[in-house]
Length: 327
Image (cartoon, rainbow, N blue to C red; front, side, top):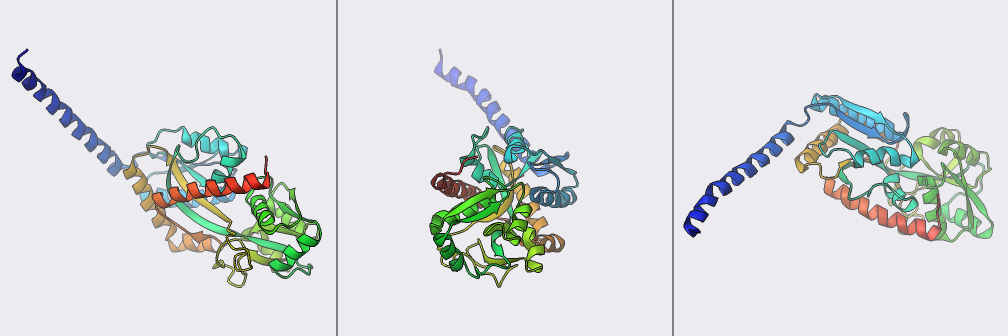
């Protein structure tokens, strides 16, 4: 074979492949620039009315306005958020299927066998909000500080309630128990509100609950707030110390919510979604609605959110293992 003719023969073929690669790259870029061209489905892995649903609908409404395309909220509850989340893990990575994820996304990794990888199967877009839980005791209790509660728990058995095994309130309670060495028994309820009512009635010694759940009981002085679970005081509760401030160095529990897409969603589409969502979080009406319920606006980058998810999975794996939590 004539090597010159052979090389020459390859030149048009190589040139054609190069042109094709540039064309494909251009098409991908154009698709990202044009996105979205049809309605987007935002899956909420919980029932209507749940915190994730309320937040998802706020974001969906703002994205619909920003994009000029309908963003449809699709509630798919079940298995502690796993059913809906799994649908997104297996969806096409084209930016037209999103999911609201929250604290259970990282705790479930150690509580049950998942049909997806909570890191590898998702493209994090941004954390929407975070909020601490509040440590409460009965209003008639003589426990006025975290130190009082710890002393009581070392002197006698105490009970605390939560919305159920594996819930945020339960895991916050187990972290508190293991860090302090108190003698405490968890009592699971079908929701945080019934547990809070039993704290108010003195049937439970304490509870870790969300600010919005306990607001009526606090206003009626039926429960007393001892501390918040964020590292620093919450902006919405400036007079309530943190558990760190109360002597538990390293204690932090946050209820957080975020948005993710399937893994391999094009970076330009993730960037478009991120910019639009962060913009919506800064709208005065949205900020007022969220902060009035004790939440803090986050809006971090996809990279920051991804790093947070990895840290949170590792942290809760340690707590769940040491506390022996099982569903």
